[in-house]
Length: 81
Image 1 (cartoon, rainbow, N blue to C red):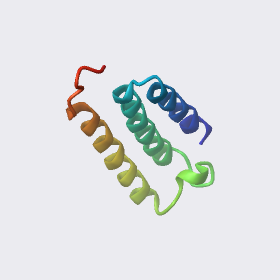
Image 2: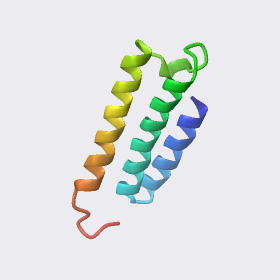
Image 3: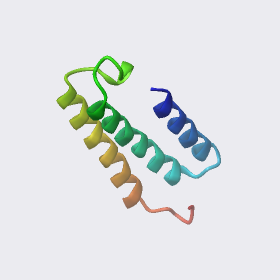
Image 4: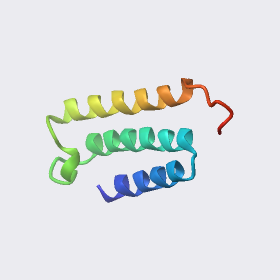
């Protein structure tokens, strides 16, 4: 959980520096990282990443992370990087 929190802190820094697309990519990456941790680690070790069954949690976080990254990739930058 601390690793995911650290990655999300990096995303917040990007967002604070007005780098919303990079921040959004990092948020999506953190969600995919959470899915990978949930898939690889036993339920006793994942802490708050364990909400429902392992299969549901991994599928939901993978879809959510992929969607966040896809949305960030497809929105026009309007001159902002």
